[in-house]
Image (cartoon, rainbow, N blue to C red; front, side, top):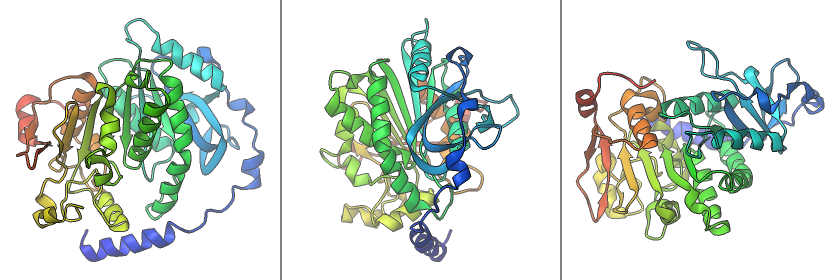
Length: 376
């Protein structure tokens, strides 16, 4: 995408993203979801749990979720579809009462052999209910264990030109996401959070509140993984920035960035400064670094225990905005699987440190030398 096209997209995103969203139809507001409830005993170990702050749409035979916000949270589970189909479909979703949902999730967390694990995935920009579930299943399947998994769904408009709407909606959903994490640290002492794109903002906010509200339980969150995070880089990586809160309690924090991420280039243009998920130096708040340009490795982070800054520019996915290369490439999925499972990552190459800051990059050559498969 050339600079002119990127500039036009930025202007369009700012103008159209601010357009008001029409009110939900009366038929949606009047729809009865009573027939969409399942029973706790229906939840299988392979199912995915969800918490959605979208408005439930029960006008059809299958459960759907609208793009509108709802103050009434929806809890439920989804049975992933058969092999060869899309990983998950909304029509396979069933609702549960909140107490039943929490009991069913707790039962899976406490199963022998699970070691009290639970995995949460927070989706990003331009992702609807189905998209969030598909990506949640991808992440869950990379885990070597059958870990109880929760898809945290917030109301994205799922339009390229609704960036500002999505940014507003995830900010609005923050309190619900915070509360969910505060509840789950009482049920599990082995929690992993994975967030993509704008979801990284919710992850950072939820961890900050957890550290303040329950410092004795905050260490129950063991690992944090931010994929292409759309959040101000300097806000996180500066001295005493958000990274300090993320690493508290000896957590492992992995941050994936790229210089090829077109979605984050647009976000950077809208915000004026670099995003955490970009390794491009052109818009760095360290003005001396700007001369290093796109190839300057500005994803480097402070040399702190537990922190891994990983550039994925060489993990090339076919087409698209290159905003999900970690999920869409073999080396990206292999690295994510290794982080989830606490395994070595021999396909990473160490980037030359600069000013006490360190990081890595993924390389296809090293990956090919280590493996001849592609994680599903």
